[in-house]
Length: 345
Image 1 (cartoon, rainbow, N blue to C red):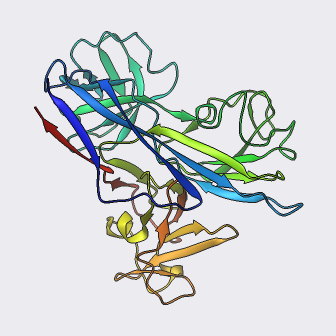
Image 2 (cartoon, helix red, strand yellow; image 1 turned 90 degrees about the horizontal axis):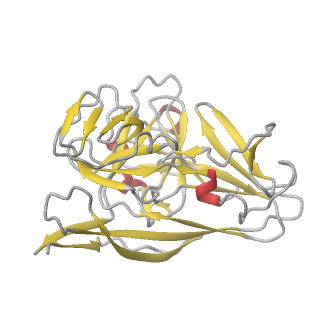
């Protein structure tokens, strides 16, 4: 039998206000594995606990979250044939429409599109169509399919750790960016609702790289457990070419501004001050720290000290703001997998 092993790189999780709880290795069957009919994949899963402190009386506490895990994959296979954005993978015996009744993503594990994910728009028993205009999909690429994260899957549907209430004035809030608009959600004790709405929002999608803001106003700290599958391949986050977006730390451990390598992306504007450069902004608990790259190093507005080593803790996100008038194209930020994978007989 072919055995598959995984091990952490030299990145060691550190405690911040998010607590690393550990990884568990699960042996799961690898659908369509090219190595051996009985091949196994050690699929690591993890949990990070984020604590939101209780605010001062009459105030609220804001916490910027970034989910470092995807939901567990429901299929893994290899592209055996492709026509445009429609692919086949052997004879998987899928149920027609099973990946579109709820939003699912296809993510490539290998090849030129490794780490990138695309929404599944249709499937039959043996074909899969994805929303990937202009993307060249090649045969023999390894891929996985996993369901999208939602408000309900992340925080719960009927029972939640956040404070509930009949309206947004009496409940904790979750804010999610939709284009240039920030939508506000709260849980009324039975389901998630959007501000001003009455229909369930349990299924509201949170994209893999999408950060969100929690606004807590209760008298006790809120403890949130973020759980999911730890990627064993690279992850690609789509960054805007203009405007702003809240983008998660995709790694299940702390990283630094320099290690993210955003400054190396084509179209990233560097400059002598924050006002003429693209910005990274991190919430410090009461305000946003604004960072920019000079071309030589990261600096924070108002300081001349190098910020290359400034930390982005696990479970958090950065607000990316492109300079005014930017016409750069949206681009992918590739994040290396936190594991090295080796195969042995």
